[in-house]
Image (tube, rainbow over all chains, first blue to last red; front, side, top):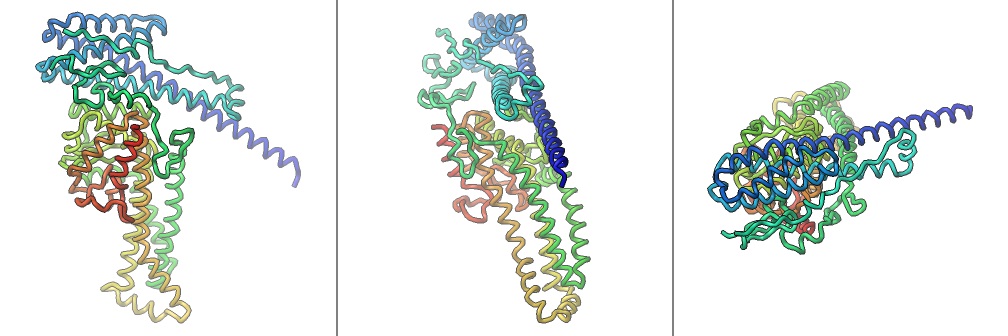
Length: 184
Length: 357
């Protein structure tokens, strides 16, 4: 057999490998972007739900003005944030304020029994979970993607086509901290 | 109840009831020593491919896809041979092969396309939307976000037995069904564990393999029934006698082998169906923990299922392997036997406990 054919075969194999690797990197990168979008979708949903909840519980919780105000303030700060850092901090404050509100609601049995409130609490709890799970997925995918574009041999293709690593999502300090609940 | 009595969650600060073991809001364990080591011990799962201390789920998925393909190929050969055997007994083995192959291909195609909807119909499951069951809907959505797969359709079976199952040829076209009993008796945390298990069956392509297995096992059972009837059966004596007359000395051995094969194939099919399904229950449990990061939720759910009623009257031998726990058996003492589709529930609880530590 002519050695030319062997070389041609090897070249075709190499091209095929590049195509397959490139496509899988693109697919992975799209999954990362999609996961990031999912986080914003859920954050948006949280902004929409908060005013509803506050409006519903307001009448029952005369002595909790402060907690409610904190939630609203944090929400408004988050929606009007301009820089990513500012927004991350504001989101953290929303989460902390919400958790505090949830803890307080636990203390009002007639509030918990209200079907409207129960429904809104369920939706907000679920949205909180969805935000957490979306971040978890985002970080897992970023880990996978970053590893692939750094690892040999897929890093060759990644370098050629300029695949850039993504940043991990770090939980802001405000969310890690335990919020202080006013004890009466 | 005053706030002082409540236990603040070390993770999110939510003030939980004094007797709570896990945070009601974020579902993290409340005890200090439990929350310290958050690494999950996946090495405890039997037969799981572990890589860097975590399960290599990618490997699980590609193995499932490969196994599905292999099974279909293997079974095509198998029922072609069964067809040949039937044909031989009835005069012409070529006709047998052709007929059996055509029937099989039609059967496989139809079942893979409509199998999920058919099994849901058989079990009297009805589809629900967000407003029917907000909590269930939300939990399924949470878990599909965690897994990064499209939202499956959700069905409810009006039965008091606590059980759940999933179907679907691929994650883009899948469904999860749970019973009314499960919804009534499980907390949000426990439900999340169960749904995580079902979502994992879908994302690992277990459901594809399981659907394929039920379809193929079904074919083999039918074919061997037909074969047995045409050889020993009633109303078929004419063929029986004719084939006997043609049987020469040298063909007796082949005939005996074929009879053995015909008799044994349904047994092989059943065992295959079971053995395959047991290991993936462990893996789906692990997959659930990977999504929820909370082994206790699924563990507590399984404990409830173990001590409660899991019986569903619309479940059958043909679909029992789809469920989270076996919906048929009332007596659950003898678990780890050859003919069991599910692993012993105590073993599963034990593994989840090991992950919590």
